[in-house]
Image (cartoon, rainbow, N blue to C red):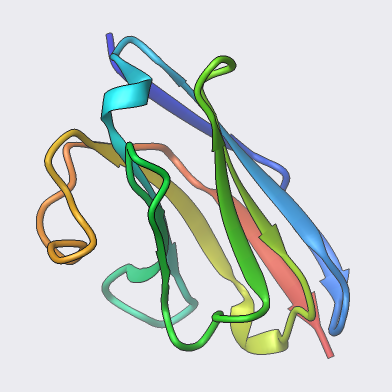
Length: 124
């Protein structure tokens, strides 16, 4: 069974940092693109945050570029999101996603697998 489990969320003051983790199981992790999305309070749909492909190419939403870094560890089947200089606008439930066909050109397409999310709250 394919599974994604996020962790690392919490409450942090503006300007602080958090590192989110996503543990994957049940599929060939090294062949999948991995992404982070977020759902902010009052919003109806998830927003793309970052992606790392199977060949380690990365892309970021403009709103987080220069502050967030996505990385993966294929041996441990983990993907991380290092979040620095956090802002209140980063408050959201953060979701890990996986798909074997997503590329940098198709990040807004349907993703095959989703975790349940981890909540990040940034206070001003």
